[in-house]
Length: 490
Image (tube, rainbow, N blue to C red; front, side, top):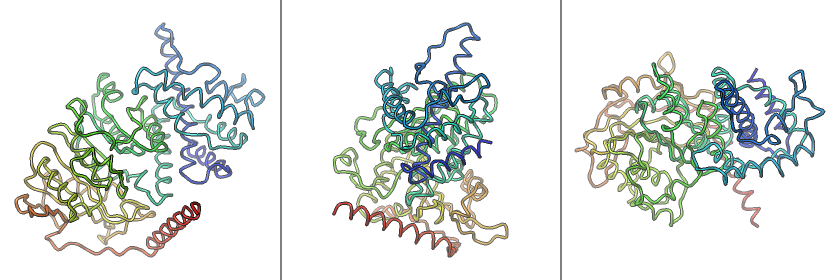
């Protein structure tokens, strides 16, 4: 039922003049989903308080509750359309009354970790793009069909929401910005192997995929106590996201996975001065896929010992600094980082090898990130001791018959593709796809870490014609956007 409801919502949004893409569909679904969830959460807490003989203090005042403005019900339990606003009245109430009221929560909140603060932050960042109050009424009616009561319902909703994020990522040329393949994230989490009580951080959290998968991994541990569950809710997962849309989606994604008040901050991670970092600011684990290809301003670069405009290189410095001694990291980065000869790349590789034990490099094939034509590697490291040996694994998915398999939109990475990597990594075993390199043999002039399989097993995987056509179409769309922007400036 939930799946059909999501389809119905998208069908209405496609007719909406204010929504032009999957990004808009996800954003507009998100703020409505959030308010429906908030209503369900408050009702649940009020009921719990009543059973305990206590009084519950509602966050949302009566005129602004879902049941008042969005879905007033008749005696039959169905929406009373005579009492429910629609058309211009509904649109104007949302834009001129509801959003300003919710935005003021940020000023009233005790601190940034509270749900009140998150409410204020979300409704100060996003705007209602649904221009037709009649379309808005149709969408609200569909949203009201969703239920957040049981874990099963939340689980199904979280899967559907992840599918929306995936579609959103695939829709743009920067697919990896919003969506890291979940099989890759799960493999990274398994290798890092977080424990209850450890803190987990993603300073470029996007849609919070890493934090959600780490939560699912820890939540599945046997014999969790009430204290363990409280620790997972309140003191385990931390993220930062710069972009407004991704911030909202991250909050909603974590909520649907079961975290009531996510510890996600909305700011520019790279604006934090590394010289100011203290032990209390550090984390046990970093899991991240920072944006690459971006350029940061000179004043931001001044926050870092190694000056570079490459965003991903600044993030890597940030992550190393924010790890505790003995802390563990798993970070996705462009494979060119391993061999670039510019001063910043060489200096950063030197810093990584000398301050951390870079024990594993996972070489990912082209097509791992759908919609992004770059090749990537995953760096696994522990902070506090220099690298002695680097274990490489060259991921090359194959079919059941052993033939090389092209990755693409219709043939994405799956968990089975990474099973051998996870198994061999436990003992750093050699195989046709894996080998080790002694740190002593790494050239101290360049610190080159290039992937060079000594087994001669680097099979050339030819892309399918459809993959090539998809990339050409994406490049054409990018060119058209750039030209459109240029024309807009003329």
